[in-house]
Length: 366
Ligand code: FAD
Ligand code: UDP
Image: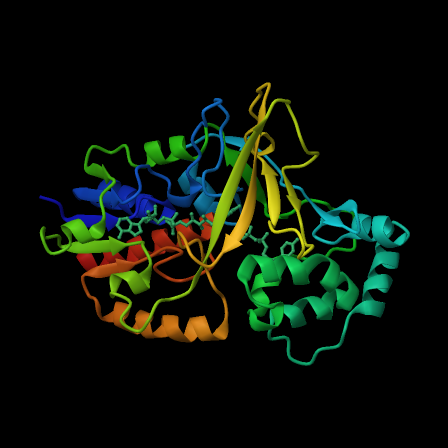
């Protein structure tokens, strides 16, 4: 009855289902073991009527015109530029480290030359930047590394920055100007009516049937499909044959306060290792919602629990490569998405990866 089975209704699965149904005219069964669409971007209203992000703050930003054009067919946008403060030495200062941060912490004069000279005098010369520790020491030196990165990263990943790929802390730039935005991408906006509404539009084609609360295991082998798109954890697909791939998880602690606003910006980071959580997010900054109350969430990193973050370390990548080799041999299955490709993808990168995977499939079909 269905040509395609798509496992997982997050960005990867919903994009694939939409393309297969609308571009190829195929019948698609889209399943998710959770009771809702949108994967980790799920953003329901809570019991107070405040829109929250159930799996942590999701901010959309991209430099891909193609991804913006694609998603804009399913949502209008609300402009939003993300700003984050870090609690350092008892003060709240902007992160990424920039001219304003250096002026507040060290009294560096607020001009680009002064900030550049200050950082250059502290940056360590490192011949081959391999780890996240190297990446930060090479840019800002040890004091700023310890103030902003070491503790946060050890909490977030349960690993020292010296054990993580340079790309992890390398996600955070250093600036000498006074630009306090977290991202500098050309397109920064939130779906106007939220992520769930975007997903409802994405999967609205009548050729897509949606089955929520449905695990792949319950239908694998029972029904036949020409092709399967798998967006869950790749090690789980292969029954963890080579051992479990490590993922980092989070425990989310939500709180609703009887006041309209709590913090000056959406997110406050806590780099101090003595504080057990990494950051506090106030959702109304992200959604623009007006409400007399406000909801916040604190994130407590964990090793056990839902798989949220693939771990970018040399050991984990080596184990993933063994699964990737098996995946390449599964001719009737396409693996796409953050968990299936074991890549620390942002949402826009997942959409781009799904669009590329669809094109490969479409080519093979003709
Ligand atoms: P997912 O969203 O994880 O979807 C996979 C789906 O597959 C899940 O719903 C799961 O239930 C389902 N599934 C798995 N196995 C099975 C099975 N056997 N049977 C049925 N269903 C199954 N990105 C950004 O761009 N900006 C951000 O600000 C941002 N913040 C983030 C904050 C946090 C705390 C986290 C964890 C991630 C964040 N991301 C952010 C990344 C973003 O969540 C991902 O890039 C994106 O959601 C991945 O989409 P996906 O479809 O690959 O995976
Ligand atoms: N990071 C840090 N201190 C900060 C912010 C980030 O050490 O104040 C490091 C940390 O290792 C984190 C990584 O940089 O995991 C990437 O940060 P980002 O905000 O992109 O993380 P995400 O939003 O994906 O959790």
